[in-house]
Image (tube, rainbow, N blue to C red; front, side, top):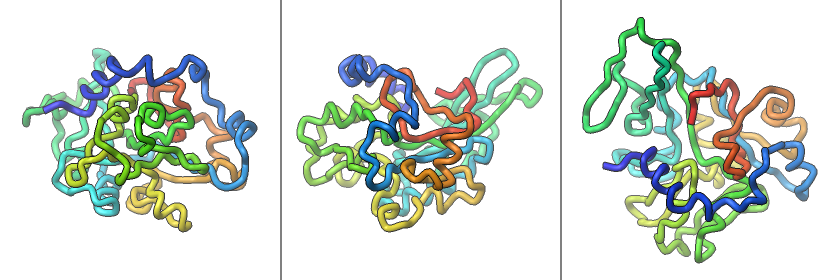
Length: 260
């Protein structure tokens, strides 16, 4: 079975250069976004504090239930990765079932039901990293959709219109983060949308509500008084794969250099 990671790697080989225009290859600055954009209405962003994530997987469960992703299907809108860095400099990563059930096994899941055992004395550090759609300000998935089924709203969220999607898979190949998949029931492209049906009604996302440790937060970047905005503007935050120029809107606190 192809994994999310290997699929993402192959997708980049196919669509990488096409999906990201050279003009987009600049570092993201949230202050610049505020200056350039029409500041009417919210601009939804997400903040992940990796220092608080314990890998329980409640966020994955909550997302599946809220967004009609079949519970036992090996696909998830959001997932949690476990990183184990050993003293020999190697990084071991797994995410069994997207961490829907957390990480019940101490060994690293290497696929096909096999575990890689690592002795405690070999471990340099270990941590968890939640991942989800980055709602890019410059989304390659929107650029490659031939029918306009994937589009970006005025408040920055990238949505998929199931009625228009023809299931060509270009958006799945074009996403450098591997967050998209085919919905096993509807047979169209699927991904996290920040629980758009909830946040536009003043509610939290399902994953935020499910996290008992405050590792996930959603906010409005155009509101300078929003607690999430204050963190993004004043603390050291990182985004994933900044070099692709997609300008991700999921920000991380405590992100380690080993995270891909």
